[in-house]
Length: 595
Image (cartoon, rainbow, N blue to C red; front, side, top):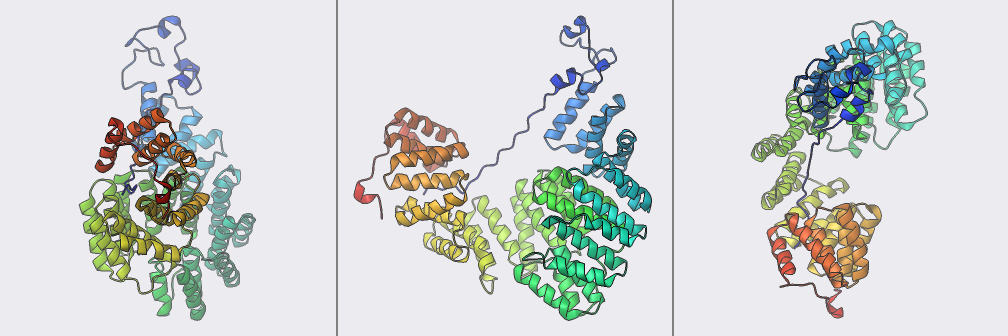
């Protein structure tokens, strides 16, 4: 069976060539650019530096800048920060460069250095958004609340600052004892659902800290009821507040509602245990510094989910400078570093997560994934097996182990891991569809089709019309030449939901091909190749379809592309036979096109 379970991830780092814009004086001062013909026309090795001295290869201002930019492109932000800092020493008044080096220092967690550059930036640009935040956070940290408020009043409100500045201003006012002013500041966040949630949380936190119990209760309750499932931090803060009010039944009811939506959450366990045993919980934040850190990490978490990892990384590092012991923020830092493929840093960050925190479990799961990404599959397997034994009631470590073994094509072992995960489930429900789907893939790849088909069908019962399940099951039926009408309906539903998915477009083309509708098949297969140009199976399918509509040269071209894309051995042999002319696609007789 031709399958597409092996996915290749190609990463390429290309150097950034910026000499053109620099030579126009848009980066360096005009004096830094040679202006006479003899300098411009000088041969290799004869160029001059900005001060007229001979160029020292590897140590010039331009060279340091290009090294820094290249380092930034490939994710080596530590080198980028160091090289840009060296450039700033030579071009000290360039505002764009100051802003860049400030951000790089901050995102590397070198907050003390970042503050120095931020101070230089705000001398000429008091509203500079990130520089103002860096300095205001430090002022909150040192108790200079009035100075922080004054600075934040001048800060630019573009981008993330629209949310961050009011939050930090509120906490600075709270730190200065102006609770009314702080609560008024948070009122400015109204009008957008996401802002309402974070504004409501921090309203509750500030009111709770100030002893305004009625205001806190109203804010927490309203925020907890704002969505189908209340955010974890809202639940923790509200449960803490209710425990200190002695409202145990209310706290248990609220936690019960949360667990109905997220029954497998490990992070709520400490709060749940305390409420069940009627132990009073401390506030989520106990002062303005912790409140500011909570605000920064909360916004960073939202930005990270939206894919804005550079700004999220900056906010996380500033938050950790305020509250370095916070396990949730450190876990978030590791996740961002992992998303950026900075794997060594991510490992170190995960190792630094407090082992007594429930976040440590998630950090270890993520650590296993990083180890696999680094080619250390055996180490990842050993870690996950230990976690499986540690918590016999949980499925996530076994599920993760199955995933890692599956993507490494150890399908029989993956099935065993998935079996272990599913055996731990007392009542299989809607949330388990993905586990059944991934086990189905491993089963199909290990040639246990009857079990695989049963898993796919059960997954669809739990999550009807799920496009990936529809596609995998439909494509498998097409390959077997069975249930073609039903497979076509399923794949059509998948295409409606995922029109830009090349593999689903390929399935649509292939089912039409198998049903003898070759011209329409070509249309879908061309779309699939455009969306996934490097997949050998898709290219092979398009070649077959081209052949049967009489486009013979294009068919050979697609087969050659498929062969060049490193197909699996069985497919490679088939393609070579077609290119030699030993085997060619032939139309199926009408009676064999459907079953």
